[in-house]
Length: 585
Image 1 (tube, one colour):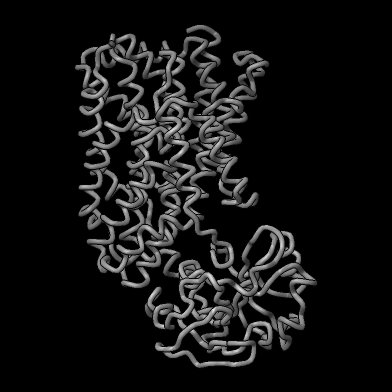
Image 2 (cartoon, rainbow, N blue to C red):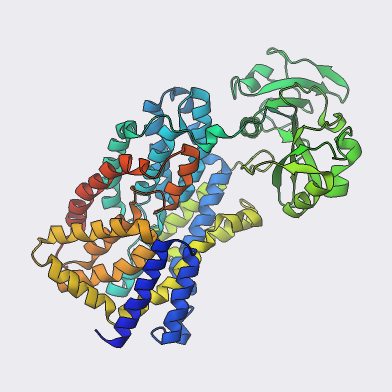
């Protein structure tokens, strides 16, 4: 072992140790590793920041933006809506929701696919009495195995494609992962469809424990283009049966009608709708209604807050408070401890204890809440007043994938162009775009890429490959392939899947070459292993995302994840050998 190799291994070992220790943010650990590599001279100064300009960083960032735009569009929920009435029990809900997440994660980042369907799952759980814990972990695992099917489904695939370009001169393509990923996905879904019963009962998550605010009342108008013009009130109520009600109909400014199912709606009618913000948002979007208070300037944010006794709004009407003129915000909805509100929101005299939904630009809301002494409630995502129901993000995503599949442009350019186009079309606001990007992951990637290159350039990967070669020399080629996948699976919970691929990818390729086997097969094994952490809540963001809402404990993941891990190994290893071959050429 040379001095440079020893130094590289020392930095790598310290990095892994700090990852395991967990007291320092992993992106800061990666930056420390990069700095150490530069100071000791194994990373050239002119290459220190090359990782941040790497295509893989651009692809991951842009894929996250596109996924967020697809989630915000509501298109996926629209496609799911006809199926939801038939999902009355967990035995049908789990395969339907997990399958939907899996299919969506083929086209978007798996974390984005899961984020799209979590609100749908929680809404379905509330309606049918199903525990969210029965639904969320199978959905998270489905998002991981669905991400195996395409290049942009998960970060390990993107990084492995880059490693392959360094080894063979050509990266993996968009659908090179599909045969193996599809085989694993089908086997995994077959297990999840009944395996969810292995999860413990009685888990109570934050989605159930959080105190619910009583239904809100919001004010909407029926524009001339609405499909409800000259249609009955019953058709509006049927859009969310038992979830949304109509308190009053106001026509020609002063004529007020108590709604009846047979009553007809006219263009220009003002309706006071009652319901949960999520249900109200869906009805407003489907019926083409217009929120009366949705005309505030700037990018839309929605805040939920309670009127305190010291608030100047207590005893005042929203109209006289002149919220748009003075603060740049609008009053979207009011909840009053379950009491029915039959007055227009502008003329409603507010009381201490009323819960308000306020809409406006982020700076306006942050300034208005303390000035009005409105106490913000625990943050939750509220789409009312912010939704942009549209098929545009789906079409843009499919266009980008088609360009990549036809080899018209590289992946980085296709997804960069898609992200820019969606921002231009305002499918995402600037604030939503910045929030969608996982900056710690990008920093980790940008910092560790030069460190990974330093381990390779000093000959460190060849040295580790030589050690592994001696350990695998007695194994058949299929056994060596399975060992690499198992090592990647074992390391991922402690390192983060991106870091695992950056470290294991070059080692696997070097080992394959030493054994006279195909680097492609071994790189594919690393990609699958690093993407499939089903044993812990910390190895992948999808697992972490469902832990709180599902009320899971650390050990719960292994109950469902251990059998699924064995299935991935049993199906993935022979599939890789069959599709890619174990011998070069």
